Image 1: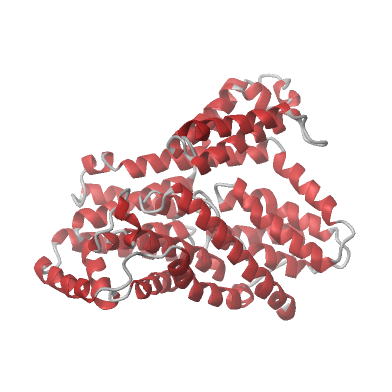
Image 2: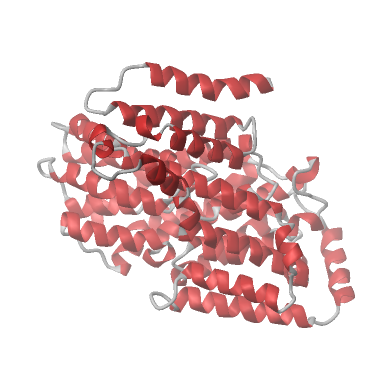
Length: 483
């Protein structure tokens, strides 16, 4: 597609939707907001300009048009209400989001691995042990995430802060460089396998994703349903086992690496390790910091937040000289991702603020009225899952949609509310595969330079459909059986 068409298409879509009358039951300002949001999403898919600039343009445009887009007549008529001040606070709200800063800290972890040499050493050890075949590397990455998942309630900390800093050192060993024609040699496969695997493990365990815990709290309040750790694990176990075993092989088939095996690379890795010699002081210090961070991520909540841990270790990496402040300032990917994800969080949150999410949920409720409980359950799961395209945070998705979906389900005669609750909440991890902004680690892997926008969106749609299909075909009947 020509560049001018990539630029024009999002503007044309937003303008076309804005000119259409607002659907029944939706306020005009909410419809205008959705029109701009749809244009932003299309721009993110086509990427005529950098993603961070797209997000910044979107929030700035909405802030400028806030009296007509962000606020309704009732809010504007409220005494003392100042739309200019309120809209600026909304536009900058994403920069105070904890997950956004944890993602930034994950990039700093990766910087520490790079500057200390520890990442290269671990990557060389992996290559020496399992590098004879690229596929076995994929399984090593998936099982490494699985080992950490039950004890790490932040997939950003687990995958973005622990797995990614290691695996990013693997592709260069095979001559696969970011933002380069060689990226597909092995880098794309490794990065996609890592993000897909963490999405699966995030659904496997209640404690593998922070929004899982939030979801159960909301379900307890909304539907009076309680689910134990073991009930969660048992309900997703068949789907999780199938998907985790399939992910490295699916990525191998659908996004095949050019390098499939190489014994000479294994021998070379051994020689490089010998040349590196013993662990350096910086490597040891970083190793200690990583172990401390991992321990606090696993056992520190609620006394210390995961993001606080990430920022503390980031500061320690600089203060101990593992990386310099100039290295931090030069990390363009980290700063770019910070701006990109922060603006998307604000944009996605605005959908709920203007009332679009509530209107959408009401429409879904009307559509499932009069159908059988099983059909309604499946329909609600599909809508809940696909609606994540509109969210840049699983937490925001849970907060905005889960209570509404449970309320809709409760109105269906004969609905098994525990089965519905399980069916909804167990998708929270796997829906993270859909977009480059769907879950915490997504921007980290998207920003790696190995997954171009077009490939990420295409693979996200394919894997998202496969994940959902397996969940519907295997997971739903299993939930109904054990329930």
